[in-house]
Length: 304
Ligand SMILES: NC(=O)c1ccc[n+]([C@@H]2O[C@H](COP(=O)([O-])OP(=O)(O)OC[C@H]3O[C@@H](n4cnc5c(N)ncnc54)[C@H](OP(=O)(O)O)[C@@H]3O)[C@@H](O)[C@H]2O)c1
Image (cartoon, rainbow, N blue to C red):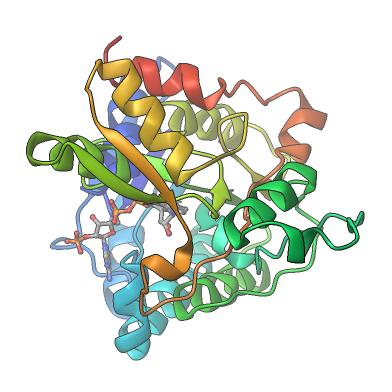
């Protein structure tokens, strides 16, 4: 079985390439960097896929700088919408399966609890209120309606639509809060801890921190099936960025005082969802949800 990875030098691309090479059932792994294949070029996509003739294409290439997407909407469209379209068309043409990676930011992330506690909004601080709302909210499942709140999320939704339209043999894999080999929140926190004894971290955005190691394993198991469709794929458990920061410092034994703050304390160009936690419903139904809890995966990543 021959597998081609786009965006091969990104966090997920690197981990997939490593794990695929260790799998006996995979004969060839072609990890292709942006320098070798720009997925927003239709011609290049055609040429490369026809040249390599993979059985499976895993699209890890994306314009992932969420804030920059607001400013560079055209580029985000080219990479996150047209790229998946060209890949889907080419995969369909050569008879390859396509795995396309998407995101929790396809959802609006409103707290979706049905129970409204009278007057709570007025009796507690905005932060306490949102933390309570999160505890009562329900993680999003694959069939929930998408409603992205920023350019990145919108382009990722449209990218999914292209894949569905042009390549029936597809797996759309929505993941979240990724960390692996590259720039990510975990590394940022460790870097900041070198020079700061106190940090303010957003405590009203909730999701599922997910290691590329866990995600790559699940993707490799999934692509060997023919259960095409859309999947949520994240580590188990839900937390805030604040919870995640506290856990990182605890595992590493670093004495950093972490102060919980609201999203308003960190204004960013792109609006973030408050509650974008995902439930791996479809993987669970297939018996393919082998994800660890986020705390366990984090310990492993940090080498403890
Ligand atoms: N990171 C997260 O927290 C997160 C959360 C949810 C979903 N996801 C999704 O997961 C996937 C993998 O994310 P990641 O964290 O591995 O991202 P990443 O580390 O930013 O890697 C993305 C890769 O895509 C490459 N790339 C950008 N434009 C390209 C183009 N036009 N053609 C080919 N390659 C291009 C980048 O190359 P350069 O670096 O040279 O530009 C980079 O190597 C993406 O689809 C992302 O949307 C990520």
